[in-house]
Length: 135
Ligand SMILES: Nc1nc2c([nH]c(=O)n2[C@@H]2O[C@H](COP(=O)(O)OP(=O)(O)OP(=O)(O)O)[C@@H](O)[C@H]2O)c(=O)[nH]1
Figure (cartoon, rainbow, N blue to C red):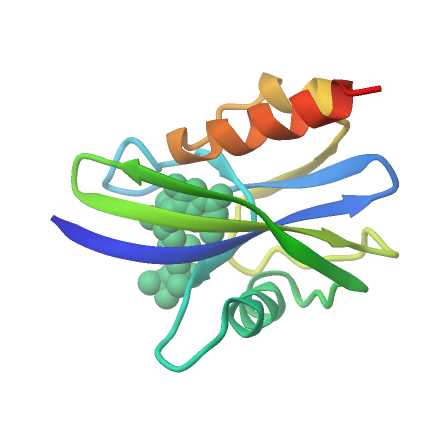
């Protein structure tokens, strides 16, 4: 099975997190699903370099800070196996451009589960919510 390695950004503005919606796709399980912005790591790139490049390409956005790795998810979709490394980042503005996605929402932790997420993102969403519930 084809394997792809991806980086994804959990971007906080205050207590809100950026969620972006993918366009229609022939693969129904990712079509119009919500995800965290990011994309494939290219040859020779570090994860951080890939993340910065993808955020500029997709959103014209430069994070003020990128934290260490938050969670790596390995998920088997019907057509490929995804390894996705997620990183918490911070924004000092909500001013982004949607160059590839069809919509976006800035949501607090408790509202994240309301969206129709790509399956691979569910462990990340759950971990964010759990961490938020710790006192
Ligand atoms: N960026 C991102 N991709 C995700 C997430 N969840 C998830 O299943 N994916 C899947 O991981 C893959 C990422 O590929 P992509 O198409 O975004 O990457 P890319 O920008 O490098 O695409 P390209 O091949 O058009 O250059 C897609 O199949 C996407 O559906 C997520 O939260 N963020």
